[in-house]
Image 1 (cartoon, rainbow, N blue to C red):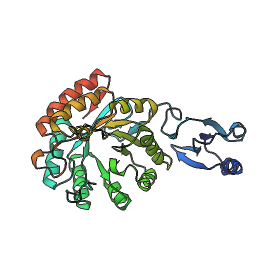
Image 2: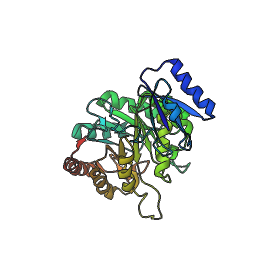
Image 3: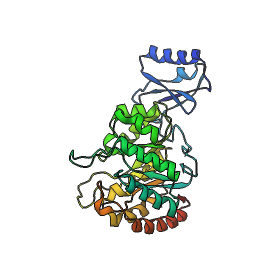
Image 4: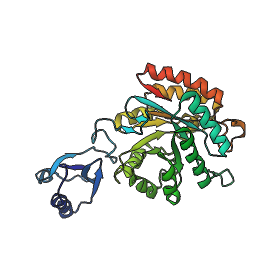
Length: 340
């Protein structure tokens, strides 16, 4: 249950509401989100809020009826819009292309990719990981701080926004110094300390759905960030694990369509990790774009065969070029603009 206070509430009003909950033996969390002061209780609380409505300073009470609350359209009907400038807007009729290699491997590899994307398509958001949470301890783990320095050079040289992944809280500040968008990967989605810390930042957070995560758990993860005060959350469907071993994962377009209805948050899709096979990534990207989503995360590499991370799914520059021309037409057909 969400209790909205009137704008600019006094300390007396906040204390009055807090004391009311305390007298009822109910735990209520105070949340300051987008200039609003809220009190949020567990959805399992089934008490009568009628008396609460009479308290001075209480504007309204919303009961989403779910264990995720702040991310729902019952709390906020209109889409959340996240504007990073330079035409990069999530949540307002655009499909933003975020592209680059899976990992920062060298300055030459990153600069060649950034130059291709910026000069040929004017791609405005560059994706690459400096910290790589790999399943095998013997796989390439990323260049860490050195990788962040290279990404910083991409911004300086090409004027691109940077989206890069954070694995845990130990390097969150270092990533935040470089990233315009912080990505929480599928393996870190249940790192609640990380979600809480990201919620205290004033930067967009892309939250990737865990590959074994239900829709409810996914949206609860978003609420962890929102309840700490950061309204700039972007959801990312990147594929879930199923019984089928032929593809890397299965892109859950059903979940994406449902989340668009349930939540006011922007949603982007990652066809590269879902498919895991470069030749079919463009086809999956086409189906994703047809959903009318807010963005795509696609991997491309100057030499896919020798990529140090996820080489099987990395598109060559030629494959990427062919894909973009088709995506542009699909986005237009569903009433959106491909921001490339």
